[in-house]
Image 1 (cartoon, rainbow, N blue to C red):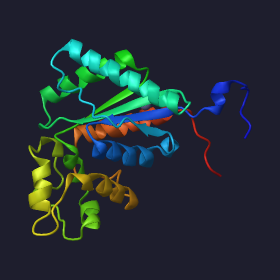
Image 2 (image 1 turned 135 degrees about the vertical axis):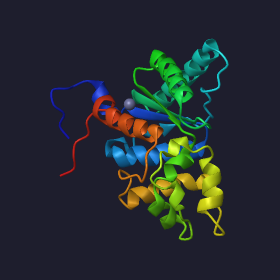
Image 3 (image 1 turned 30 degrees about the horizontal axis):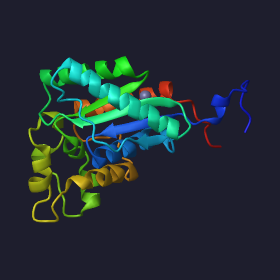
Image 4 (image 1 turned 180 degrees about the horizontal axis):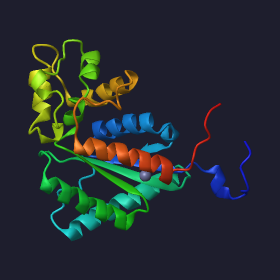
Length: 229
Ligand SMILES: [Zn+2]
């Protein structure tokens, strides 16, 4: 492969995007979505496996300290891959519905990340990842055929629902196989496979944020990939 005008060592490296979150499911959900929206990320995503908790830092100093720890882990990950660090995505669940507090909390952590990273995205799902899943009834039914999103939860701002996890476990699962948190990445992968990932039934502010961040990252933070012929 020829590269235009460059002889630098950097050209041989593949800048990586680091994923961090509360747990494995969190990171896996991000991975599924980012790879779907930005194929150039495939093969570039590396994970920090330690649980990252920024939302509930008790003071600005504690938040800064936690973000600095995260930054050093992210740089160490990139170094291990012998690559530059292109960007970091951090995902946490707000565990409360959307509202003014959500906007304030998200911005507070995003600002702390901006201070330590060149490029960073803070995804704070409202109230939790399950609120995203409710926007994809076909993917839920495609995962377990008996799962059905009741009419009252369709076409909603799912960020306003207080306990989407319970809705998944009770109302969607019904008497069929009960929804588990570890199902979330598979449901999103099913939405990708069914080609409905960009046609959510309903809305959710944190989902729109993630979608916008994925596009921004793909166009501005990672080197442009060559399109296959
Ligand atoms: Zn980015």
